[in-house]
Image (tube, rainbow, N blue to C red):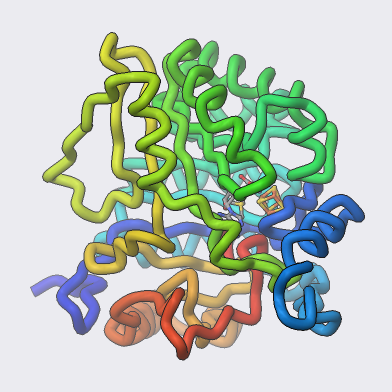
Length: 355
Ligand code: SAM
Ligand code: SF4
């Protein structure tokens, strides 16, 4: 029988998220909250907690030295080996993937790998207008944008950048160039952008795209996550249903999908709710992650990483790599522990792991 990436819980891996850089040109409140506004927000939110926001909480993050990042050839090789083991969906992410010079060349080589039938990218959109045509020509199928707010001032508060016009332009351009489907992600944080949920949904309806609301997960570099800041997916849905009679989109053939989906009654636009905190979907997880510095993570919340660089740079054959991947996947954890007494936040942030 051909080798495949099956874990000890019977799940077979199909989806690989490849981070091409840990760097970013944004400072999102829920990811790399470096701005004064982010600090003020968290200070206020922690004010009622015993002791307030602990001073020594932040995770120190330093950009990885260039030499530690996988080269495009190394990334292409890992993806090729993984595709031969059944990975058919690849997402290029980061950090901000468009900051990696020549990323369209990597996209071109990933698009040519036999077995990769779905090649996507997640981006904050800031640099997308300048790269869109090259990415399309290189063979990128789909793009997901992050856009947490439709209000320029609130967008800036959440991301640390005046980036809203660029993202809006990027979304329109993606449509014109034929990227499909177009998804837009918004992390919803109570007291920050939860009042915009209806506006964001209306945007999806108006522009006939997929708007996905994501629960805030404890993966921020300041370790300032609090359960109270999470707006449960069910609450978002209740509010949207009060305005529109949303129709559930069933996907029985895709149990591993992270989003529960609804469409608007007139068939224009879609809503996705990604609720890893309040309604974990670990049971069907088929995802693996490759960090920019060559570590495989079997879960967003893994506390261990598996370094492929010694193999890649030490003369290992493709078969050695394949066997290592099979071995790593066998140890994939059953699920995350958010909300459990023994939960430990991973040492790396979402920007390093690759969202
Ligand atoms: N920089 C790109 C972007 O923002 O789209 C790609 C990388 S980013 C880490 C990928 C996704 O992770 C984004 O959609 C972002 O909103 C999401 N994300 C980052 N930190 C998060 C957190 N603490 N909780 C939930 N989602 C998060
Ligand atoms: Fe950068 Fe994306 Fe993290 Fe925002 S979510 S800081 S854009 S990596």
